[in-house]
Amino acid sequence: MQKNKKIFLFLFVVFMLIILYVSYDISSRTTFPGSKGNLKERISTEVQK
Image 1 (cartoon, one colour):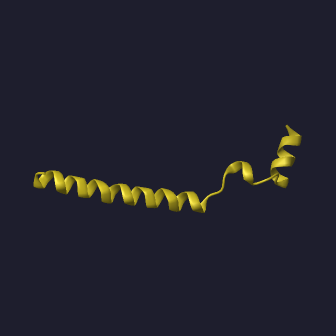
Image 2: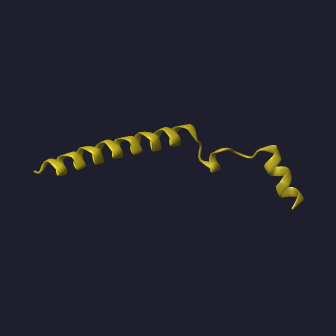
Image 3: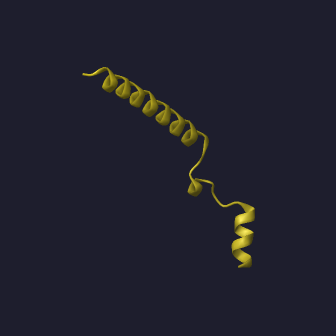
């Protein structure tokens, strides 16, 4: 392998690891919208409509 290809491959792997870590971190801090249950505000706005 040429030196440029090795550098590109290394940078690509590092970039993908960073992207995977950030996406996992974001997904672990948020909840699925359907799992919140029925909040009082949501129920009252649905009744008024």
